[in-house]
Image (spheres, rainbow, N blue to C red):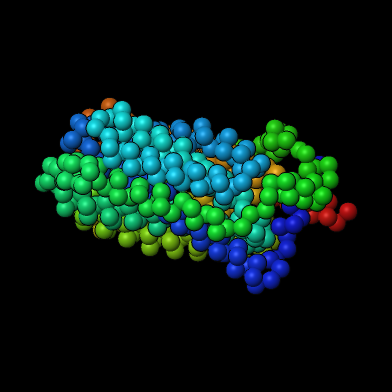
Length: 454
């Protein structure tokens, strides 16, 4: 059986109007993704205030950064992928944005750990709708040799949103360090960190209707077109697809999910490391870390995707994986050096190598799967990719690091050593899994080329 390539995706957009509409759609999804990452990551800058006001340990905080969000992001993401393949992706996205915006606001109303945990769960539930819908619609609008770039422009939201959350969160936390309460009309006296959650959640609620500016094909039209293009392959189930090509559809997310362990660990604990080890205040950390994150991540996000598309267009059929492996070869030593450098500026520069070469993987990794995904399974393939990457990365990255710091070293100043251990253990696993996936991609492309030549 030949690989499942959507022949309709092999043609360029037919005219300038279609291209403008396609990039306009990407821009709207990008804006929503920026705010999703602000709402998701703002908590990373709240370590100090939450420790002080709610008496939380590093391990409790790591559960809020990772599993409280990630588990429900995954549990809801899989059925969301099914819904995206069958119903209006615009309505699903709008409702999801409304839910995660309100959930972020509810984090600001929390007065204890349990309420904050529930709010973080709600953020995960709402955000689980966005990327499956975005991937499904973007994959319809762009040809394979442009797909990594289009996906990576969308996932720039992670870099921009994470950077904004770090800069703004750090500045606000520093300004209100010595303030116990602020007075808000209608709400009365609240903690400053509560106001931050409310302030970042409200724009998401207001922006949620923007998605209705995007045109989408009705689900019935998508299914009918897929049936006409694919004949007997149109009815293939997700289970049949996974049984044939499990190394690609399971192995690729697992390999990149292990990279996400490192991304999640460093995103969660780098601000705390800089405050604890280098004595920087939250405003200094927020500005330096946020600017570094946006510059290095932004260059890597777009530059990496352009390189992957260029290599793929010139015949490197495993370019999506090989480029990532090359980046890891350079960035893993840089990360280890960074956390053991003893210098905040060396830490920022060296960790920036990781954020430029390795961190921005979601766009081109997801594009690799969509090259082989039938149109009627795109939402579920995307949701499954996100589920595996999130479970592996969000469930283990920040949490294992916090667990080692709390229960192995019993010293908050040892977070850098904890990050080193996580990096050394995870890196060989990434290389091993992705080496196998690269071989699978080459074989699938060879099968397609042979089928087209026959």
